[in-house]
Length: 140
Image (cartoon, rainbow, N blue to C red):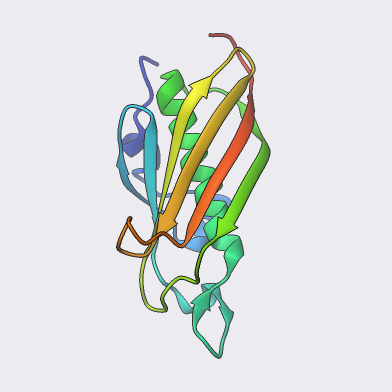
């Protein structure tokens, strides 16, 4: 494979957990990927408020970071999440799609460093920040 095409990779949706959550491709660039998590009542963590639970947002951010690594490496190669820190700033607004952006800003021979944020319509008003490391496998 020459490069990694994030849009093509996600064209038919996600399998497994991502499919169950309804994750979708949103956009990508040279070292970043954005995914969308449309609002769905089955994702609500608190029925009284209608706010999406944290688990689906963490899952989306982990996948956005993974896709950013594949884009930066220009190949679909194995890697594993070592650490993904999530700082929640506020709850997502009920009824709104959450957008998650992951960026791979550095890769060494064995570690990829990522950061990102999630928002529900305004990137200047994020609902969460993430920072993490992934163990990368395979050859450069």
